[in-house]
Image (cartoon, rainbow, N blue to C red):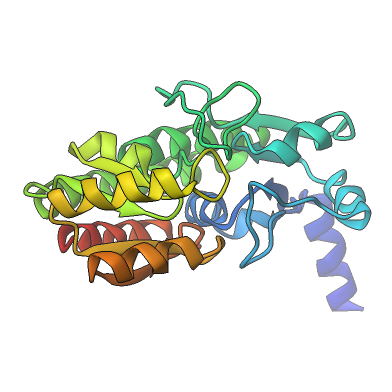
Length: 268
């Protein structure tokens, strides 16, 4: 009886349920949980190992997503098809306020912007601020908690930015199977050469020209991506007598992953 009475008192005091947050990819989950802590429950739409550029959510996923309170989207194609069904979910486009790269890489959205906005410590700070602002708006009672966590996260992003700048100070070019690192290269003055041509396998002529250019630049590593076919990259690496390194842009702990990516690029 005493336990039941305590339960009633807690309910009367307004126990707040967790904010149900949807994110498109795992790196966003890391940001939301770092800021929201135990006050958020985060669901990732694109499962581990899948290619977010070609992923199609199931009907079951879409129905479950409709129960979310907030959805942080990043500009992938599948998101546009889900939008019309998210009538009761607050949708936040994390591209807002960012200096986007216009490109035609085949993975880009209908407005031709590179969607890999999480692969930059500098842009991550802006995305983290967007998340904190929305969580504060949704849950005023824990605003101080969210803003304190944001401050710590932004500081870590700034430190990572400095680390990356030091690691990549002498780097000039990277050869990748898929052009996912445009924002990172822009931040630190690198040139990204892509084997993939606008989302398709390269033509023989393009491969020949790419090999000639990569050889003249002294490329010694070809960076492959787990979510994309490595066949072309391996063939070019063999021609260049270069080694291959696999990268995964979708690792959940995006700060550690960016540090690892920068370290790999510094060796290229």
